[in-house]
Image (cartoon, rainbow, N blue to C red; front, side):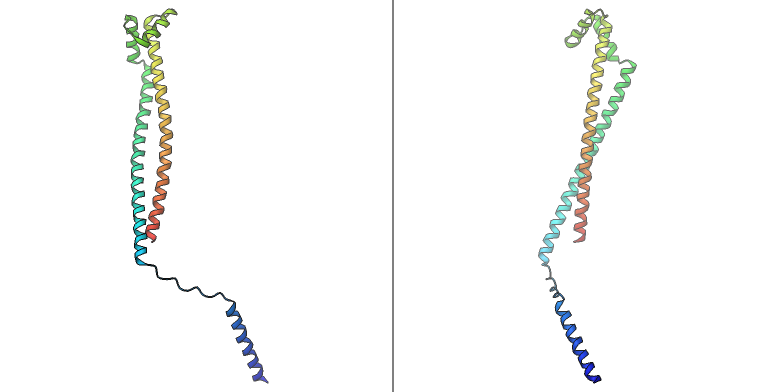
Length: 176
């Protein structure tokens, strides 16, 4: 009886094992070995991409540095012009003297003529006109600086994006 019980248990165990094995998914066949020529072509394509993106990063970096230098010069110009305007520009004094001498032409002569018609001294009117010209030049330079700041920020963002793209391409190339 005992051997019969052991035999029944063995048959049940074998049946259970067979059913469990039948329910498991079939093992995937091993992947085919990649074609060496195809791998080499893919690697060459990745390398070309890395080189192209690196070149773009270098060019964007040069443009960024040039924009930065232009912006710094414009900021210096604004500060210097404001300082000269506060101290009294030689241009303002010369224009006042020329207005007194009556040797102005064009827009300056018209502005001084309109001011003298209102009772201002010709020299003071010339200086007032020159100060207005200086102020307009400073304002125009400030607007230029603001535009350059926005351009610099846009170029910096573009450069950062390109650097990230380069890092990803290089990582992909080195990982292959």
